[in-house]
Structure formats: structure tokens, C-alpha cells
Image 1: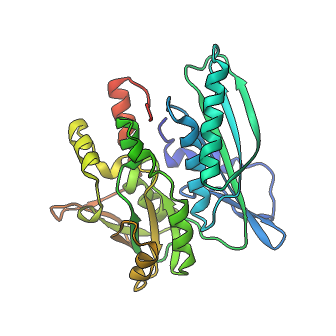
Image 2 (image 1 turned 120 degrees about the vertical axis):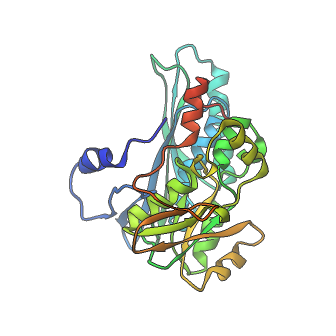
Length: 316
């Protein structure tokens, strides 16, 4: 459920990428949300994601997380495939429920499901759903295209997905898509890079963007919005909302001086200025003004809570 450390990914998985192809426009790299492959006059952008610990709403989660990654290119995902792995003893109604969740989420997002695979897998204790979303586009941005002095904007609030998992709140689940806001923001022409706040939360997403863009940053804790219910959860569990998994919040690297153009385009959505990309170190400015240098991506707070409670990841 937790992420593999970046240094291990760089030394193993990301070096073992099969055959070479000059059609790969954006190869696998730590911090990137998707790959891009040249196809005719355009590109196919593609992202695959597993959902491994949600017991309720797993199909909805699975479709949203892959769609979000593709949307950070600036375009809507158009197609998807799904792989559903089920524990022994699963019933037909359970299979149908997951398939319907995927179907309904895809329909809302205007995504056509074009294939996949479903099986009963010995040894599983809960379902696993893997979705691959893809789209044909003419151009795109990646999370690695941020520029020095770009302003960091953030939509919605921190820790949305973690709040949905810990509370089972449909209100939080309904906010987990960033597709519409990513497309609108990219359409302004002022967005250099985007990243969905997944594992590691807002802080993890900013760190990954800076890593992919080979930059530093200054993130101001006092500017990061946190919903009252999320703040209450974080106080209860003694966790940092900036490190709580936050799918549904979108980070944007925006040309300096054009912040309000992007914010206006995204209205009436909540959008906040939370920091700046820099050429130097990765700095978190705490609410008391203390400056904390970050040397590695944070561990997600949700996994720490779930290990402590031994309850498994329970979504709505």
C-alpha cells in the first residue's frame, strides 16, 4: 500500500524498461503521472494504477485515479481498460457491483471502457482493481515541466482521499476527480505543469513535481487549505494533513503573473496560491515561520494510521 522509495525505483524498476523505441516521447521517470508515445501527428498518453486496499467503492476509486493521471496532461482521458482480481469465494453480485462502479465512474468522466480482464486469484484477501486510462492528444504538459519562479496553485483542500477513506464520506468521494479542472486550467495557456495529490499528499506531490522538474520549491503550510472535517481527523489521529493522500486536489505550476487568470478560469472552484518553484532547495515553511528542508518524499500518513489500527484501507 505504501510507495517504494524513489532511490530504489531509480536503481531498479525505472532502469528495466524493455526494448528501446524512438516513439517514446515521455519515458518512465520518478514523479511523472503518465507516459506519452508518439502516434501519427499526436501522442497517446497513458497511465495505469492499482487500488489495493479499498473494500467499498473500489471500482470508483480505480477509474478516478487513472483518469486523474491522464488529465494532468491537460486533456480528458478517452479510453480505459480494467483488471479485476477477486478472492476465492467471490460471488457474481460482488463482481457485478465492482464492474458497475467502474462503468458509472467512466460514464461520468466520458471514458469508453474498451477491454480488460477479470479473474478469481488464489491467496487474495480482498479485491484488487487495476485501471489503465489513455487518450490521443495533440500536445501535453507533464509534472516535470515546471519552471523556476512558477507559482504553485492548488485546487480544493488537502487530504481529500485520506478523509474519504477514514470517514467513508460520500462528500469527500465526490471530490476525487481532477479531470474537469485540469482541462480548464490547461486551456488558459499559462500552466506549465500539473500533478494530482496522491500518496504523500500535497507535500509529496510538490516534492515529486520538483524532482521531475529538477527544481526546488518553497511551500507555505499556512496557505494550504484544509477542510474542517479533515483537520478534525488529523487531530484525532495525530497526522499531518499535508502528508495525507489527497487525490482530488490538483497542483498547478503557473507562469508568474498569470495566477489570477488561471484562478478566474477555474472559478467557482476553490483555488489557493500555496508556494513557488525555485532553483534551490526544497523548503517547507511551517506556520510558525520555521523553514524545514526536505531531502526525501514523505511517507503517506494514511498508511501509518492503517498499520496502527490494522484495519485495512476502508473506502466509502
